[in-house]
Image (cartoon, rainbow, N blue to C red; front, top):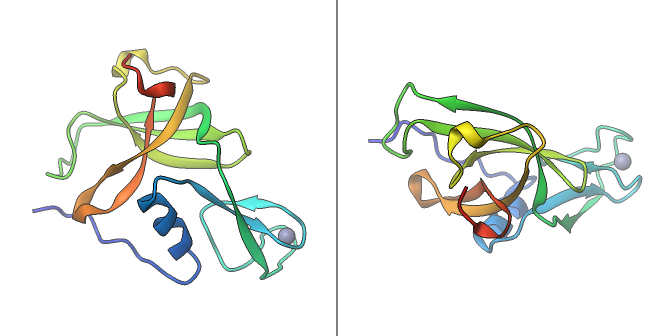
Length: 136
Ligand SMILES: [Zn+2]
């Protein structure tokens, strides 16, 4: 049985999870100063405005860093499990597991894209892959 906690969905981040279920990566944008931010939150960290809308990400970016997890093992994942931090073209970073890339081929700066996959509890969340879905 998985020990992964269920998502904590609030009025501030519900849009993000809803978009992920539809295969879109949305980024929160301040309506006053235009700053993009992630993870979603109620106020702009730059100008403190509570007004926001969203922009759709290209889902393209480069690998900023990664790690390979061996322990503890949870039945929701296959191990060893690579988890990466991607610098998206839009200038924000997100964390997601990496699929379809042999771990010894991972390199800082390599191009990846954000896809989506089913995770624990049937939730649809981002997953990093090679551009175009090819294998490493
Ligand atoms: Zn702002």
